[in-house]
Length: 289
Image (tube, rainbow, N blue to C red; front, side):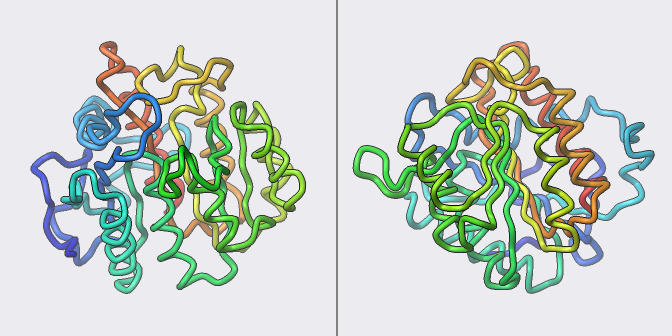
């Protein structure tokens, strides 16, 4: 699957017209085949792109401008509707191609299961990979209603691949008792309810390591992001999530890839969710590169 031309006409603000000189490839994964509550996150990537047109191109947080970086928005991947297994295979192959070209993958979901094939591709290149996972949910189930390919399982799959001691979860406030027990007994790092403060404590341990960052928009309280498939009350603010992104950006962590998932715009007529997501992506583009 190629990333040398956009799959759709909508692009994130200030995307470069050429992929060859781009350092970062932005790509959408419009998949919500396995969601357990409200579908619609397959429409998230393009709505985030549309919302980005209202952004300033300059970040006062990082004192950087989008014109200082080279990235190419390849649009949304044409994933086979309803076929989770084949979609996962295509995403993994696509990200592997990006990495072979020496470029930084920045994905937009879609449901959170899309992170799993990305990590599989990343781990083949970075054997000491660590994961920073920011989310309301543990996502540590082995299966959901008998289905192993579910948006409630990706972090458990990642733990089994790269080792639970290399997985760092933040903002978690929802999950089965067994999932929290697995987290405490397996050696993974799980911080309940908050993100910024516990992140400050562990970032020194990740200094210099290759790290992948996955950000689920539902870590935000529904007051800030109602447009998501499985909203959970009691979340963090947009300000704290921006702080977390900037903490990672200014640390010694070697971010080698990232994604933002689970924006479902149909549930947010105010559009505050895609508007917030577009700003987070801008800060990720500027801070992680």
